[in-house]
Length: 80
Image 1 (cartoon, one colour):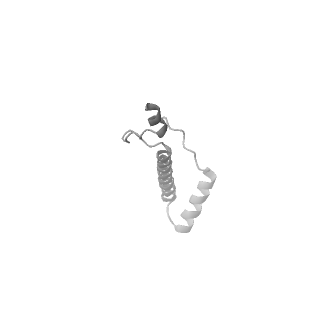
Image 2 (tube, rainbow, N blue to C red):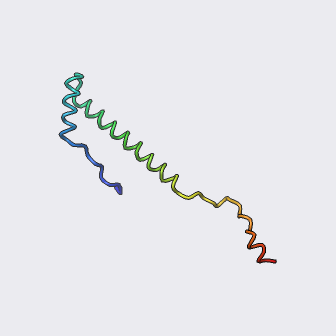
Image 3 (cartoon, rainbow, N blue to C red):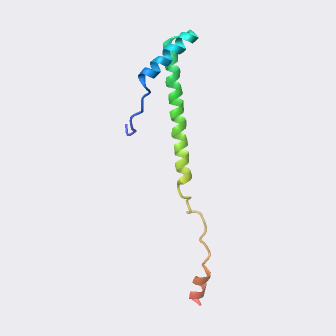
């Protein structure tokens, strides 16, 4: 529900592709349309996964379990 609307393919272009493929390959038009739909769905999932991976790489690392750094030389001089 909170996702943006999916972009649609050009209906005229899709219809041309369906007609040509179904004629040349002697397959039903519904098979061609289903193949296009499945391919688009698979590519959308791959794209989404790539975007999520890229976001994970951009996030700063969690330093929660990293030990505290040693005091700098200036800090140790101030204590003396």
